[in-house]
Length: 115
Image 1 (cartoon, rainbow, N blue to C red):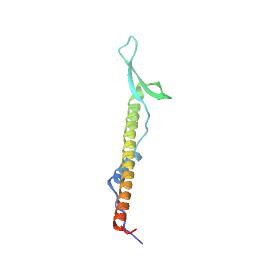
Image 2 (cartoon, rainbow, N blue to C red):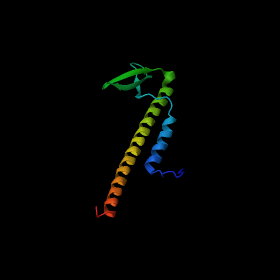
Image 3 (cartoon, rainbow, N blue to C red):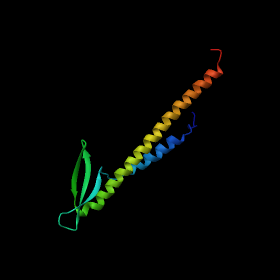
Image 4 (tube, rainbow, N blue to C red):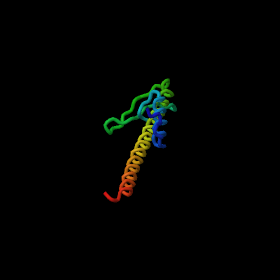
């Protein structure tokens, strides 16, 4: 039984770290929390804006839920960053694999010139 484990490259390590962070994501919501001034009043209303089929939609956010919705939108932005990090790491690993396969093929062709 072979107990040696293949050494991980930096792309795999980064991807695994980002995936561990994804597991810690809490509730999230896509959109932006905006403050809208009310007519004839100094106070503002809070709305969540988001896109549906290319059109901007808005939802009123009650004052007692503003902080919670703000946390949700921040979690969504964090999730997007983590998804991009996982994608970059996976692409790097794929490119690295292709490079190493090509290098191995070239080394094999050089080692056996009589074929």
